Length: 502
Ligand SMILES: Cc1cc2nc3c(=O)[nH]c(=O)nc-3n(C[C@H](O)[C@H](O)[C@H](O)COP(=O)(O)OP(=O)(O)OC[C@H]3O[C@@H](n4cnc5c(N)ncnc54)[C@H](O)[C@@H]3O)c2cc1C
Image 1 (cartoon, rainbow, N blue to C red):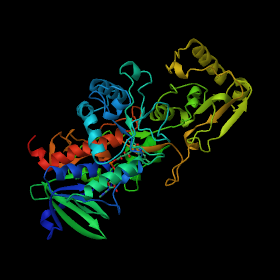
Image 2 (image 1 turned 90 degrees about the vertical axis):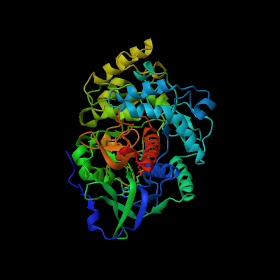
Image 3 (image 1 turned 180 degrees about the vertical axis):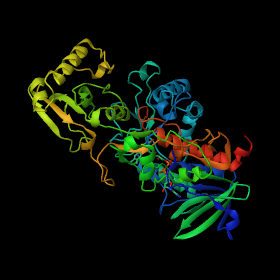
Image 4 (image 1 turned 30 degrees about the vertical axis):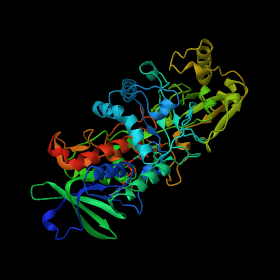
């Protein structure tokens, strides 16, 4: 199903004057676009970056800039922190976590080059502290740079791949990774001859009489301008989480409960421009959304139950996997049972209601309005697993299996409707960004609905279906890692005009 906001290509024959003539035009100056631009100019192509906002950055600059990197024996950061990571191990983990939905060719190229990509990022001047935070954390509040950001230590993934931390985050106290990364990228770009046009919304591709892409039409200061691209156009305009019409079409289930997470121009423009050339869009029904409840990690000793008082997930999973399983519960009603000694308010708890506090689980169940015997039987079974050190239902790691026997006990309402919304959304719910987009080769060439290359068209980042394909299997860092790495691939390909050679 395609969105109604489809656009048509402009015709070269209708254009009297081109404002720019370059080899490569890049639409969107975020993580993917900036990295594409650098590789494009370094490979000899004159390059123009079009950016809709008044400055670059997009969601990449807003992000923590965790990048999911490893393989090749380990990145220099992994090695400095005492970890070895083979490419095969990284591939096994990613393949398993994406449960058959991953693109094996992209996964392989990424894993083979992720350690080199880290050196490339460092060469921009991005700094990392050679120190690991191995606790359960989303973004370190202190300044360690290496962390576990996915389900590496969680069943069933730890059974197929050795758990290695792969989250690489620029060093700074607080959550400023994206800012650090983007400033470094921008400085590097400013030291080159790349032309940048801000406040410039790419509106449509320009085609010649043979239907070949020859440029981009964009709107700047309310005036339509035209740019000619001799080698190719790269679409790096981010995802579509801010385009309600596309979200309604492609992600009706997720939008019923999730709040958008991104920059205001995540409108799907790049995807729409691709669609105007009959590009194939894939994975459009997949999105990231997370239920973060840690740190403090002691909350992992609690259990999640649904409105029937039943468990449904191993609680030591990463927030996105927890979020996926929570979304499958009736009306997305979910509750945490926790004993006082493990309870500490989390930054992510915000204003979540505490439904009841009681001296016994039976009282807790009654006070919170659950059917008699529901929560109490779940806790009793869970306690027997904890006593024996083995979770027979969900295989929560024994490290987090602790009997819930020490009163007082509390039940916290984590139902999606109670989850705090970001400042820019009037909607409550877990935060979501999109994981579907244009189908591309690992080297960035865009494919049409017949599986053929569309000459002169390349794409990367959330405009494409890239490395991260499911929320359930998402590890933090997969999106910025993907956008920056595959942005570079697209930049090299467009500079060399590769899709005429393949
Ligand atoms: C707060 C936050 C934290 C996050 N933290 C992480 C993290 O730590 N690790 C991780 O992997 N992922 C993280 N994510 C997700 C990740 O940041 C994004 O998925 C990723 O950065 C997208 O990169 P991109 O290059 O595709 O898009 P962007 O970086 O968003 O760049 C797209 C650019 O295109 C521009 N644009 C849009 N339309 C047009 C147009 N028509 N013409 C010209 N320009 C246009 C936009 O203005 C923008 O500058 C986070 C997201 C958010 C919102």
